[in-house]
Image (tube, rainbow, N blue to C red; front, side, top):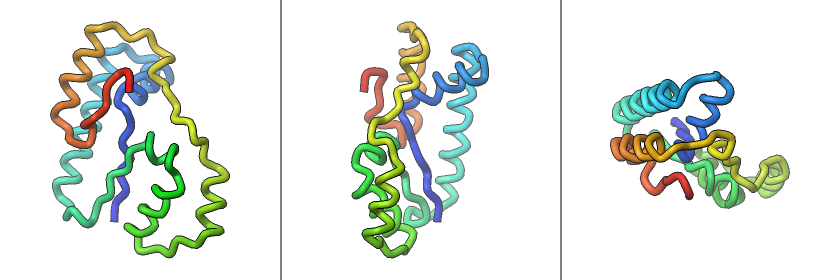
Amino acid sequence: RFLFVARNPFDPISYIMVRGNRSFDNAIDHYFTNCATVQSLRGRLQPDEVLTIHYEPFVTQFDSQIRRVCNFLGLETDPDYVAACVGVVDPVPRRDRDLVDWDTRHQTEVMARMRDFDFLDGYSFGA
């Protein structure tokens, strides 16, 4: 069983830029190279072997999301365990994209490249 966590691409790209001191182009290429690797790995697995978790609802709806993960892994969802987990998760998603001054050209490029990856459906710069 594999858990795959997806985030709004603008956040990890921004984080790559800030933490790695990389340019927009380098960080964007790095991120989408990783996406291609993930897509390739997912293609080798049966649908019931991988669970895609989207970060934003995972932290904002943690109780139901951790139960979903436990069910996928075949684990019992003990209420004390769920409550303990809820207590350590920040319910506000981090918006690392706000750390970088994004220009329209790079936003447009990321939006275009996202189309190749179904696990990024629904994401945008503002959402």
